[in-house]
Image (cartoon, rainbow, N blue to C red; front, side):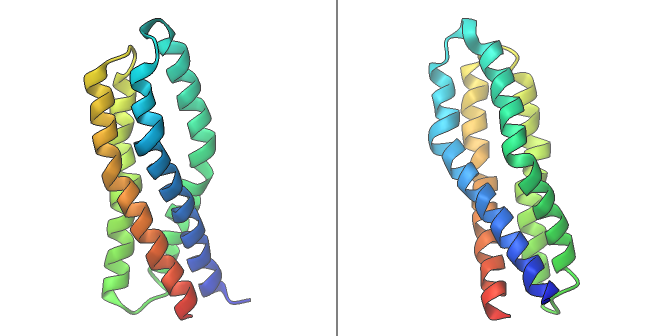
Length: 141
């Protein structure tokens, strides 16, 4: 079995999944938050948070593991730097920026919703770039 290719494929698939989620969230889901009635917010946000965790948790774990595994697979410094930057801008950004904004959304707050929409784009772009890079590495091998 070609483990190198399998690891790159795992990264490509997990990053592509997260990129698709990121684009959907930025274009449709987060903007729809604006239309949730204030009295329904707590129940809606609780459902959103728990359901989204099930949707993105496993691929993010695969992305993290495969990202670190790829560091030993390439001699190219730019590939290693790209993988780490994409990981930092996707998973790191989620943990340090997007996650804390979600934690503040105890009640409906349009300003926080707008921040959530704006701060989604760096990670959506990072996942997209990482998916393309990893797919290229699969093809190249």
